[in-house]
Image (cartoon, helix red, strand yellow):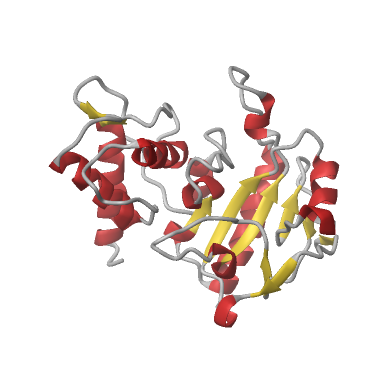
Length: 249
C-alpha cells in the first residue's frame, strides 16, 4: 500500500472528466524529501497524485479523482487543460538542474520498477491508451524538459507501458532546421500535430517548431536532442504514426 502525504493544492476536474493521460515528471531538485515537502505545501501552488523515491517507495498525495496542479501551461491534441485529463506522477530525480554539460542522473532500477508497477495500475484503472503515457516535456515543450532524455521510455514500453518504436538510426543527409520554409516543413508540423504536439502549421521552421522537435526527440529519439529535424527524427515520427494507423487508432 502506498504511503500518504496529503497535498493541499488541487481542484475539481473540468466537467468531472475521467483522466485519459498518465503524465510523468522528474522533480528537478537535489533532495527527494525536499521535493515531496514542496509538493505538499500550500506555498508551492503545485501538487501531483503520486511521488516515487529513488528506492521505489511510493507516496500518494491526492486521490485520482482530484485535479492536481502539475501540468501547468500545456496542451495535447488541442486541449489546454491537461490537469483535468491527467494523473501526475513525480519521480525523484535532479534532472537538468545538475547543470549544462553535466551527465543527467540515472533513474535507479528500483525506482523504475516502482514507476512501472504504479503506471500499470493507473493505466488499467482508467484505460489509458499507450500513446497517452507522456512526459511533461511532451505537453509543455521548451517550458519543461522532464522526465528528460535519460528516462528509459523504451524499457517502460517493452514492459507494457507507453508507445514506443525503436528509433531510426542516426545518419547524415538532408534535414530541416530553424529558418527553413516550405511544404516539407509544413508536412513535418502536420505530423507532429497529428501525434498530439501543440504546434502551429505555418510552413516556417521557427523557434516553436525547433522546441517541439526537441521535445519529440527527448521522448522518442533521445540519442541526439538538438531540435534539428534530421532523417532519424522524421522517420521515427512516421513509424510511430504508422503503428497507430495499423492499430486502428
